[in-house]
Amino acid sequence: MGDDDSLTAPEIGTPMEPAHASIDARRLLALRRSTSAELLTEPGPDESELANMLQIAARVPDHRRVFPFRFVVMRGEARERAGEVLARVTRRDNAAAADARIDVERRRFSRAPLVVMVVARIDPGHRTPEWEQTLTVGATCQNLLLAASAFGFAATWLTEWCAFDADVLRAFGLAAEEKVAGFIYIGTASENPKERARPNMDEIVSNLTIET
Ligand SMILES: Cc1cc2nc3c(=O)[nH]c(=O)nc-3n(C[C@H](O)[C@H](O)[C@H](O)COP(=O)(O)O)c2cc1C
Image 1 (spheres, helix red, strand yellow):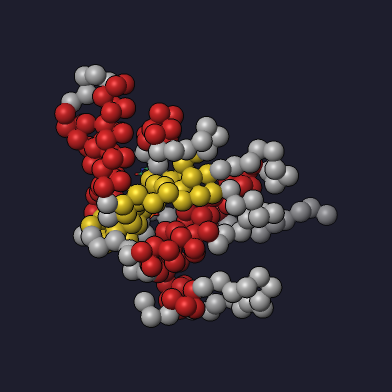
Image 2 (tube, rainbow, N blue to C red):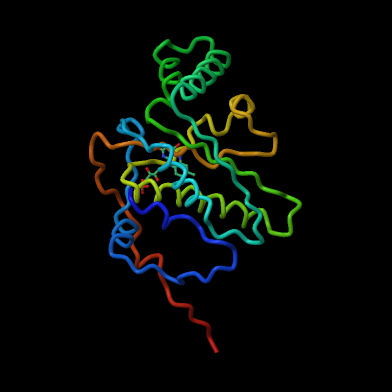
């Protein structure tokens, strides 16, 4: 990527372009599709690409600048160590779990070259409602998917059981009040995804009508 400099945010107060008309951006937004984690192979993003992608992910609408999110990057051996945590918790909670199931857990985060854990750190005491902070975290995950695609990588946003297990989250370093908004798996698609059902726009778009 030769134009990384143009991705650096300018100083606060710098006049900005209000829009970025782009056929490529329109195409990305209109045709974005997740790729199953099982189909995400090497290569993943390099350090510079990842840094840019996270910067883009963090650039979301955020009422009163709460910054209710943080990112934890899982790559290389860290994915295996995270998988060991899942295997351990699974074995502990289900002594009869088959070895195959334990293996699935051990390899869960190794399905893709890179996994970004998006952590929600909602501030319940903030003037900005929790609902709005939660929406901001969701936008962060979606931005990361879009950024991955713009850099030429396939990705998917998963939670799965591990996003909701208190012991797993503690082992991953989350504070008691933090939550996982998503594990964003990123890599190169070994197989192209197929289109899936989308909303019927006639059913979800209407014009506001108010009786006078
Ligand atoms: C918060 C969140 C959690 C998700 N968790 C899972 C999951 O655990 N397993 C799964 O198969 N899909 C999950 N999905 C759905 C996929 O990310 C993906 O959106 C879906 O397969 C449709 O693909 P698309 O992104 O191409 O529309 C989740 C989506 C969201 C928004």
